[in-house]
Length: 66
Image (cartoon, rainbow, N blue to C red; front, side, top):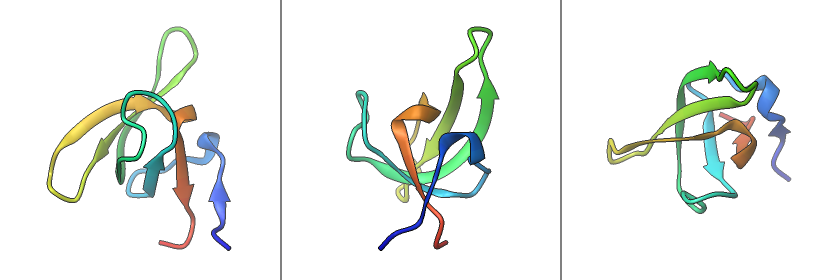
């Protein structure tokens, strides 16, 4: 079974999979973690092919077995 981190424990370099939102099903490494003015965690995810996209931290599941 895969160990899961909650979004509040996101760290740069973590491998994640997007499970909700417009990027659902994509995966990559977490970079650029920010806290927005409204209190939401926003992250940039870099896919293996180099494509980057932004999403909310609550939309991802992080694999703790890096």
